[in-house]
Image (cartoon, rainbow, N blue to C red):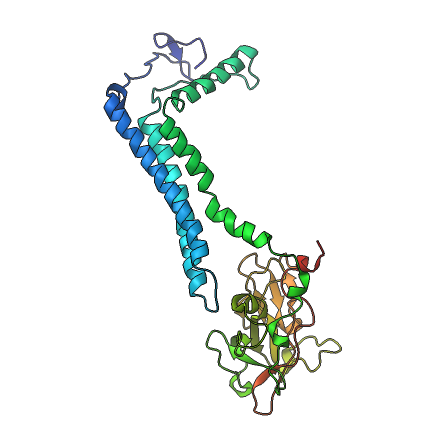
Length: 348
């Protein structure tokens, strides 16, 4: 159809057959088009949805501060839950309000857009601008101050549940040294090394209980109870370890200086991916590969956790381990390199 075609003209189909242009059917008016009271009711409904968005955003931010992360994960879970629900309802309220506004208050007359060349002439461009201005005018924002205020407030507050945690994290001092020390180097007085314990049971692990092919998720024993470990979740996030056992003949490489870092095929590596810090925990027993579920970085546990696939650029740090006099696995020292993403090593 071209711009000169009217509803009463005869047009040609692609095969050359002539037929009369049927035009558009009669437009059925809505109740809100004919009844000002009904339109006002629909406006109040839109405002109510926007108020729901505003309240949800505020509740999300308040919940983030009301349930801070403590020594256990209860506060963290509650805070994140309230934050997530608040953010979701805030965005949902704005979306529903926009849809309801468009369907009940804005012009719903059918419009035909004619085909034209890709580069329009000046007259067509001016017509397009005029159409956009007509759409803005049709929204009647200027004549609906309550609605306008609700839109601006909801749009301003809805991102807060997402922005506030980011701002809080960025406000902390950038100290790369915190990634070069973990709780594994914090050894109780009189002990040979920090005991390896199951996560989350906090049960010390005997070397005899680690069979070939088995996998343990490990944290330092009694994490959070020694001096300097007040921030339990931060310390745990850096110290999480995956413990595996394989036949010593399957170990492909032992670098000089690491001969005493494993115990009869029992190996321990950081679970913090060296790409962006996701927890690496998908172990494939046959290939001895450890997969990061976030971006599929793959590490060969038999080859000192070197990268065999994916975006990670360096191996997972290895934790030197041995056994104490009672047969329990211990860490003989902290990691010898920073845990986590490589960019944490860069100075600001």
